[in-house]
Amino acid sequence: MNTAARTSHRGWKSCVLGAATVTALLASAACSPSGGDGPGDGKPTAQPSTTGTPGATASPSATASPGTSKPAATPSAKPTPGATGTGGSGDGAVALCAPGDVSITSSTEDDKSQSVRHILLTLTNTSKKACKVYRYPLIQLGDAQRTVPEIKESAPMPGTPYEAIAPGKQTHAALLLNGPMDEAPAKTMTVQLQDTEAGSKKGAPIKVAFPGVDTVYYNDFAKVTHWMTASGLALRFIMSS
Image 1 (cartoon, helix red, strand yellow):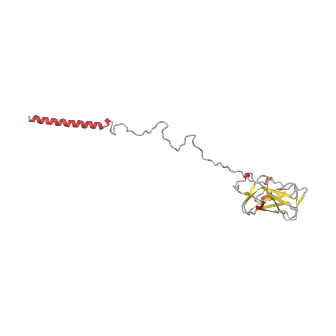
Image 2 (cartoon, rainbow, N blue to C red):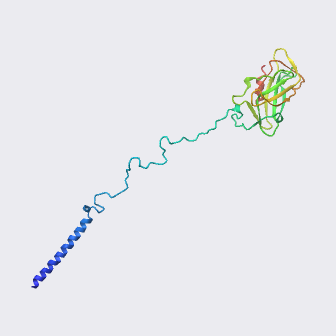
Image 3 (spheres, helix red, strand yellow):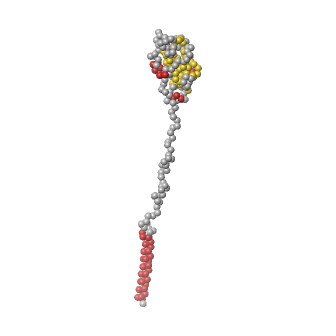
């Protein structure tokens, strides 16, 4: 009787142990790779997709699509031709010389024993600011019906038909009075500055004394150079005549 009880007791314990083992095995199976819940279950975990739908892929925002990019702004201002008063040196703000801003004197390269045929006019800026003179001086000799024509070859480079003169500085023009033909006497000479328009006049005429003589003789060969800084260059246009 006692032996059977012990046997029954051992069998119960084995059954309990067997049930516990099965439970553990089942729990282990639920957490194993074959169960599909563990980190090593062979299936990738959910991650953000790296291949979005066409058109939804992020692209650099700094890259503009074709047709939307704009070219860099280009300066709208263009260099202004010197004929409008700006020239190539940026002195468009310099005002024209008025008769009250300048003084004009005359000299000659001719020998004292000869009559005066070649005259150098020197214009000095006597004002306190820079000013400019256009083209060539409009010269009236005595009772002449017209002013002395220009020597076109002496004109400065195209686009800069003027000379800008700083305070106290000078510019020059050379005058040839006559050639081998009949001559007329002149006891007076006036010089008028030109305005911006060719042939136009700026202010009143300026009376200029002849160099060392009271009377000069002129004819249709008379001509004058444009204003220029170099006196020697101005004289070169007339001394061979």
